[in-house]
Length: 257
Length: 279
Image (cartoon, rainbow over all chains, first blue to last red; front, top):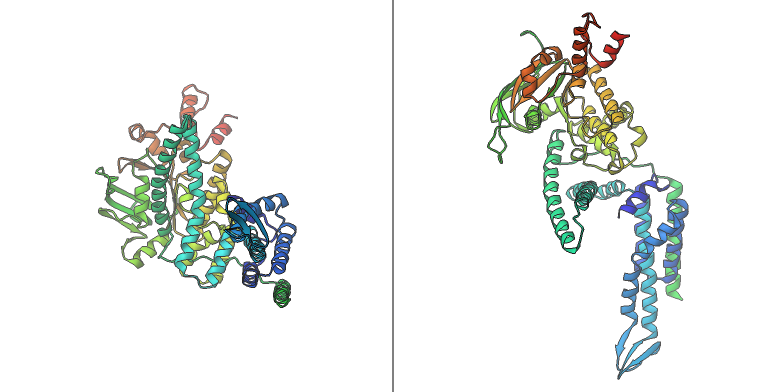
């Protein structure tokens, strides 16, 4: 998460209008997931990769490593679809285990592969958005979409204070280590527990202090801030429209065939 | 100082105690601050400086006594509080407790939008303060990627953008390196030039000696001494009570005078001035 945050601030696509990026991500995601066409999924995956790595300047090894993160879930998930345990062997493959078979049908193999492709392209869509858009920009888009202000304010504060708390936690852990807090398993567990409680108390104090500070700037219950949105580029909107139409055509095409 | 002076802050006999504590954080504190002055608040930890500051813009309501801002008693209604907070801004000691947004631009725009100005004006003001305080180089970095000094700059911009009459800085140089301390002090000098009354809590008597028009010594929730740096530094008892020593420049100056190296003249305001006298 921290890695993604660091990368998105360095992305070359950071200053592209956030609504555009959001629109692109959501439409592509919907077409891929609803259409379930492996061809469209592959196309989206490739385009997302090109946008993120070539255009955004996210280092390729980093990107690949990030894509590996959900890989295990995806493999397990599609395995559940493909692999069956049954008394009779199915048509795709079958391994006898005693009187039973670990087996799968052609249909289930196809479903599994399709699921895999769609999920992977969906992941790449979300990576495109999160690796090239800062959290504050995403919140700005949500605000425009009339997501309730309370939710947005909560997200704004949580996002800011994740980092403050992480810093505090790591400072406490360092202090504990320097007093041999992680000498063995027992002390490690104890140190972790006391770090947690100290963190909780500090978070509480911080919340109070933050509230005071906001009040002293005339806070009245609504957080109002200026948006920093970049201008929309017609050219980019056209590109997005063309791409989505192609994607839609591929999806429909693969259905017909 | 006489009765015709233009007081921007008057605190009369303030008392305050926190719920969880029997000891009074403020115990009959009275002080008056003239407009446009540079005032250093000094005293040990727990002497009540921060509590006093929070009383000045109505975050805390004193149990006894009253606060007058601009000659008007603070009214603890919604409107009254907005009014006083518009006049008196506080830059808190720990910027991480003040900066609530990851975006510097959004952060600075918060206060001024709360004053009810339109977005266009707010945008101009925010951009102006970003330029003035030299925040531009790190304007697009997230708050969690800023250094302590940069966070402090943003924290000052947060308040400055609201154009307060009084600006309170609670230990602005704490946890900063020498370079950033200098930078922050420069910023503060700029504030005074704009006619803002600056109240600053600090522990560095040498800096207070050089910077302040007035020093207020606090101890156990009371003001034990107020006056020009010279007056305050002559009151050795009060200094001792507040846990302070006399400024180094003053001690050296007096030693040099005793030894006959210097023959009187103006008391130096800073080490640089003393060096000047010796050359």
